[in-house]
Length: 231
Image (cartoon, rainbow, N blue to C red; front, side, top):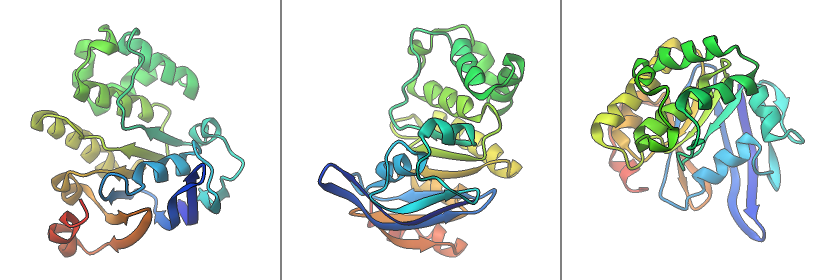
C-alpha cells in the first residue's frame, strides 16, 4: 500500500535522507529504529507530505503523492502522529476529538465511539482540558484522534518516549488491538526494543540518513543485539 523509492530530503543545503527506500503492505506494522539524528522523523515527515523529497517519490495506494499536500494525504487516509505529543491544550479532550471528527467528515458520536473502542478509559477524562493530561494520556489522545475516520496508514513517531512503564503497556494494548484487527497499516519509529519485538512484522534500521538493514525474520527480531548497536 506504501512504496518509498530512493528518496533524498534536506533542510536547506543540509541533506538528511540519502536514497531511502521502504515499503509497507496492507495490515502490516513496520518499525524503524536508529539513533537520534538518523533521519527517522524526517522520513515520516516526507512520507506524510510535510516535507517534499529532493529526489525519488512516495506512492500511497498506487498513487504518486508528489504534488499532494499533507492535508490531502490525511484525507486520503494517511495520518501522522508527531513525536512532540502536542494537543489543543486549552480545549477539552472531547473538543480535541470533535476537531478530528470535523476534519474527517465523521459524526461526533461515531468519533467518540471510535476513540473509546481503542482506549475505554479515555471516557473518564473526556471533559478535562487536554493541556492537563499526562504525556501518556496525550499520546493516547493523539493516536485516538488519528484513528477517527478509519485511516489506512498511521505514521507514529516515538509513541513511548519518556513514558512510565505502566503507560507504555497501555500504548502496547492500543497498538496490539490495531494489529490484531489488521484494520490499519502503520510505520512506527520506536527506540524501545521490547515494544518493537512484540509488535513488528518487519523492522528497518536507519543510520546517518540511510536505510542500512531490513529485518523480516522473526528469530532475528528477537535477537536485539544487532539493533542495540544502532541505538
